[in-house]
Length: 177
Image 1 (cartoon, rainbow, N blue to C red):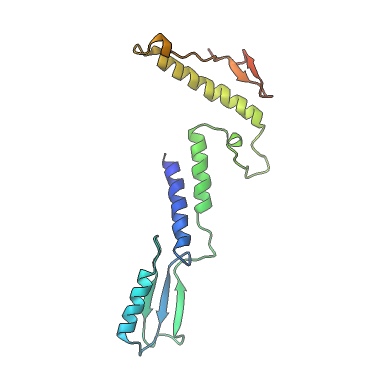
Image 2 (cartoon, one colour; image 1 turned 120 degrees about the vertical axis):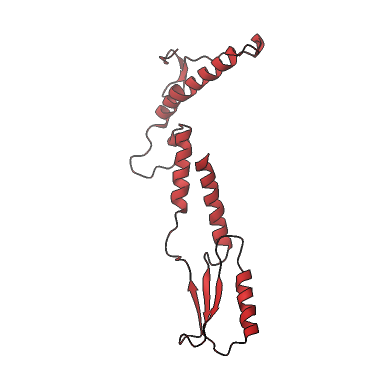
């Protein structure tokens, strides 16, 4: 659950990041010694209120006679640096697959290396044998062991049916009982 929530939060953060404007806050710097205090106050308020819904804020600063340039926009962040968005998304997606013990090749994950994800038919067969059949057994045992469930509500799964590498259902391939 934590990985799923992290994935959602990363996506929401990224949306706010871009909706906010210049993808980051900035310092609007001036050095005008003759700036009217009322105008300075208005500039400060306008810039402070221009912030979008998100985590970034911009700021107005007037330091009379501080520099030779009258106006500067100083970025707070670095647009050239990649953030961790893709890394968070990839790791949280992998965490969810691992938590559900689901093969990445069957989930449509694109491999990041040349080795790939193996034969999807073998992955499907292994997943069915190692995950689906034990879960069926668990559910069947829980439901059928409940004394309040009548005979009509009982379930019976064929635990010996498994798809072969061609996707054809065959009997007797499962060693478990």
